[in-house]
Length: 126
Length: 110
Image (cartoon, rainbow over all chains, first blue to last red; front, side, top):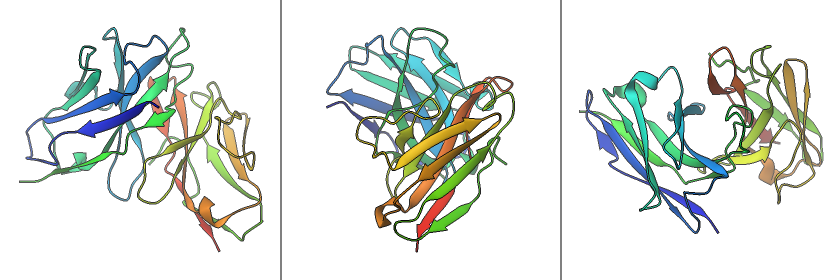
């Protein structure tokens, strides 16, 4: 059974770069049937999509975060990663990684996440 | 302010049928599929409905989704205490060129 697990520092200082990794187990990240995404949720608030990546390295990002976000993939380790630069307190959130089905046409046609990690809380504070 | 508008709260008694609305525009719900997620307290979201009205394997048929024009709805029939959770709608927005979530609806089972 495929599982996703987020890992990374729980505390990041303002203006620094937040870095998280999602490890996929029980299946291959190189499947042609999926993109892999990051979503975040500030404490007590709603969900916000950050961006998604294909095993080939193709990415697409939330336009509101695009200037600060980099998502990369390491197929040899079955992992994908998130980097968010110049963080502020507003970036404090639970960060989730998730699997996004891909049907071989436009990625926007079926934009949804069918399997999620448990999430990891990242606090931005000095 | 979320692009997709949901009521912040909803409630019902056990056995009742409740509906949660999600209002959007022609650039999101009006032209793309709608998805629904359930988030139980302290847990990650779970996919409840995909492509407007499809249920993933394992989701009870008490849950159903519908879409009309620029609005969508999630209906829960035979309400149970374990349905108490936050529910989010989601859709791709062509104008924003990004995926968007509704603000979420907290369902209370009285």
